[in-house]
Length: 407
Image (cartoon, one colour):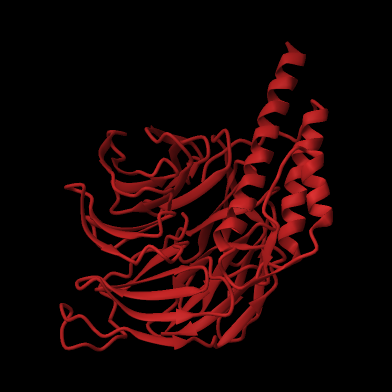
């Protein structure tokens, strides 16, 4: 029995190591259209041949050598796990991609005659106000704590808090044993992080020590969303969504229905939320009944990001390179944004009538009523995540750095 359990456990770890490697290579494939150069990949090719894999050989300049290091680390983990039954401790647990809390009644920093008017598109080479350096691997997500502080998560297993005005890294939060894919601010004093170590951790913004660890998921935690000050949702590679109580630390409800990785979650009110998955579908849920109220079908690629526009409307970004506006109560797609030639990594609601999207070297500002792209920026670095900081500024995350911009 012990041998069988060891083999089963090793098989699970091998599967997850391969999944991480696939995530890394998928990332490279998604950004290879950006400006890049051929790298010396003899070592990478030899390593891939050794473990029976054939992969792309172009690494964008923006990615840097750390990507090859991260990918090789994944492959080495898979190779090592396949040859030995003993594995790391099973720290199961729960855990947004590209999600930020909607700014209710936020004033618009953009001046147009009326919200229904379609403003002309403005293109410009965007120059960042400030750069933030500290992470040693790709930035996965960003969340604003207040109008001057924000946090970022990374493949380097850390979460960092930054001062937007000074550019200083105020604090580094360590405790996760694997890539950190999801972060979400619970209130003005606490935030959550979800990791490939299968755990969700609760932190105090003023302390570097973890307050509490939540366990329950059987695979990577990919998404987080607070329902209120005491409950939060986590989405996982195990295809489930879990509702946790902060005060008790217990899982209150498990939601099943997706057929692939749950990659993003957004709360619409204290009892309803939407989730996006690599099964190409978005589901609308009621937390009291635990039932899926509606499935939103239309995207032809994995759902990467969701953002709430109102209590009944959301925007979604997908690997099909389209952004869609949905009415979750009816399940109808109200509008499509994009031209099917730009990647979509992240979307965030800015204020009434506007949202930002980023992907590759593009940052786009959309006008929701008209469907028009108000501004299209070409950036020197690949933008992976975006979040509104205040009425005049927003933050983007790239390969290892973050940037502060003005609208």
